[in-house]
Image (tube, rainbow, N blue to C red; front, side, top):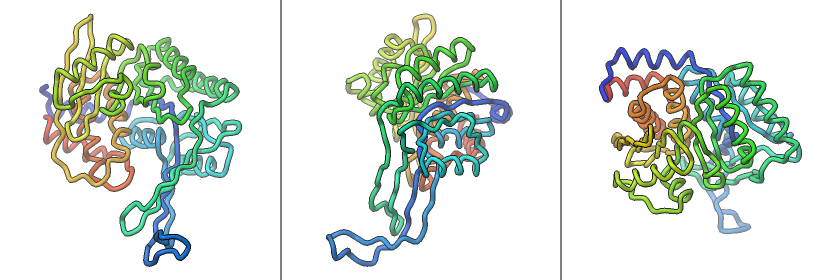
Length: 337
């Protein structure tokens, strides 16, 4: 792959022209930060004296933040609870300059919140408040009508389906959104989870990590073997009619495979050496960069290489943070141009 620094600057500039619809499970990442200096008299557990509370957007909402950080317009669509935490999530979206037009408050639903209790820069405990059952039909009808209306109005350049197994991306929602995208000639990028792994058919880009593809296909894959990765990718290409498969492999980098006319081309792209602080949210960053490249018709190897760099960059920072566009551009020009 040969690309000049000027071409990279032009590509990053074009990110600003893109509209990206993100459909999937949103959540609040809530951090309760304090200090431990004694053990509870009630049980042999530490007592955290709470000093600070921080709420952040997570799940598909973090993908929207990454898309926005890269300069594109993010159109976020999800179903949340008609509850206090739902109001908190909407306030967080407003604070970040994200439109709430695509958010539906569901019936008998709660807003997914992950509480992380932190002391001395260490996570002591995580408490998840959530419902992971599929959204009911009454919510599905309202949700899909809203998505259809927003697609017609915004005419997105790419759609991301961001699945966290929390019930928003039901088989009906998946199939309807893919059909809507196909009718409007919009590429679709998917970050899957195990439950509906095989439901994603006829899409443009499929981005599982190693664990997800092993569980989804029920096979063992050697992440250091190109042949093993090629075999798995071919199963996905043929079984689910996928144009591109991007497999993230943590410290082993990424693998990209493209199908065209019954033939397949693939590349293994190694990870850069980094000081890893936190891997949380790296997958959200990878799918965000990949989707923008997809919208712009970028070469698959360049798409995978930029996504790989972006995922690594956010791992250098503690907590879930969106990618820094200028840092990504600088690193891409240093390592890829």
